[in-house]
Image (cartoon, rainbow, N blue to C red; front, top):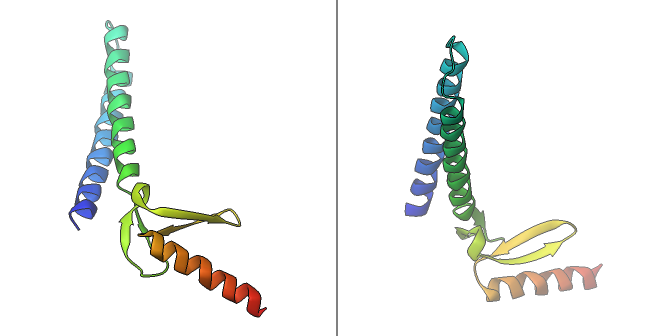
Length: 110
């Protein structure tokens, strides 16, 4: 639950950052004289870097659901099975094996 709260918190920080960046860029477009273009570009690059760091952190915290026991876990920590261009996620090797065994039984029954 703490991970989910942190992911939501980071998402709002990301949205707030984009909003502030849009305001900053918009105010610079309105100004008549742009004396410090290099400084402006530096600020924009810093914002892009911050946004990219937040995106990376959110990707690391993305939650997925185990198809066997229906537990939620971080995608990067999950065991995976790729089948027909679809990725299935599992909390443990045992759940992964159960899924594979059930698939074998279904295929044999057909």
